[in-house]
Image: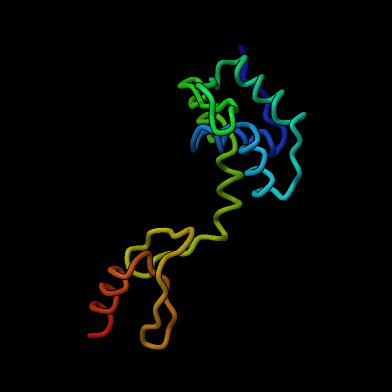
Length: 141
């Protein structure tokens, strides 16, 4: 059976959210809306979840809060998400690359957070305070 075609952001976000944790449909809809800024209807979400279940990419386990079915990725569903990640990997990299900074000490890439410190009049980015301390030790003696 060929993979499900992912042709819109709602479907992509849905499977990515399910790869983080099991959730019920309404919870997925609200999180997709929050992250994309687009209203998601039950008519978009539940047929797609049904299709994922038909392909055995998700299963429902018991009932979540307020008597709703919670959807979880199966091992085959995790493989499907891995294939999607490979397929869309270059696109994600292009989107994320401008947001990365590099630690001035260890050269690791920092996506969010990090630690900034002014050393010798320059504001530098570090992944952590320990790297800032190591940088100061090497560059202020």
